[in-house]
Length: 79
Image (cartoon, rainbow, N blue to C red; front, side, top):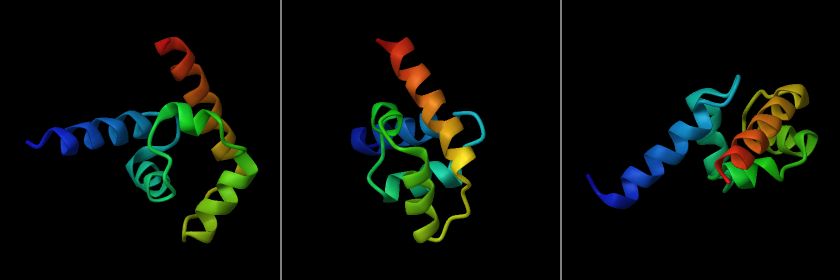
C-alpha cells in the first residue's frame, strides 16, 4: 500500500474514532480540509456545523462541540 494512502487512512480512522463522529463525518471533515486532530481542536463548533451542513451534512452544533472537545483532549494527550 502506498505510504500516502496509508497515512490518509490512519488520519481518517483516528478522526472517525472520536466520540459520536464515525467514518462519514470524518470524510466530510476531510473534504473541508480538516484532516488532523489539532485542526479539528481549533474549530468553532457552531461554524463547523454550519460548514458541514452547507456541504450536505446534518450536524448539530452540539455534536460538533463534542468532536472539538474530544479532538482537543486527544491532541493534548498525544503531546
